[in-house]
Length: 177
Ligand SMILES: [Zn+2]
Image (cartoon, rainbow, N blue to C red; front, side, top):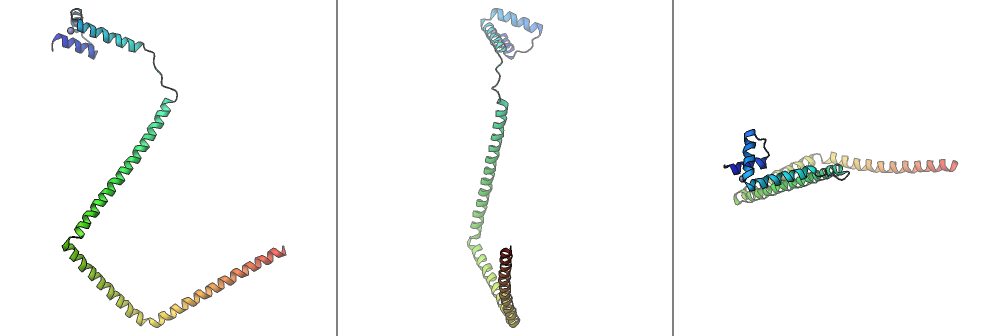
């Protein structure tokens, strides 16, 4: 780095200089027009910035800013949630498509058919057994069925009669008043 570059760096970085360095800079500025201009311009600009009146934000700025931030955070959370749901549904569809592919492979299809026929056989055996059990308990079950239907009828009749009676009693009470 030559003196020119070094002085330029000192000017732009605004670093604190040692007495020797500031002397060196002064000497360079006296003889280098470019560095002198840079130094003067920067000094002028900084003075200008420092002297400029402080611009205050519009009233209620911080409140509005906070509200904006809350709104933005909520919107971000919403979009994050939507993204997450989309990701999960994409994963589920990929998984279901791949499992369908595996399921419908020729070898697996035969296995599945065998499994289903086993299941059907099992169900038919169960139904047959249930039929046997029912044939043994046919008469008692018949009695229970008829009994429950009769009980239902009795319940309906009693309920209707009691409702009618309550209505009649209320009517009577109203006419007495
Ligand atoms: Zn220079």
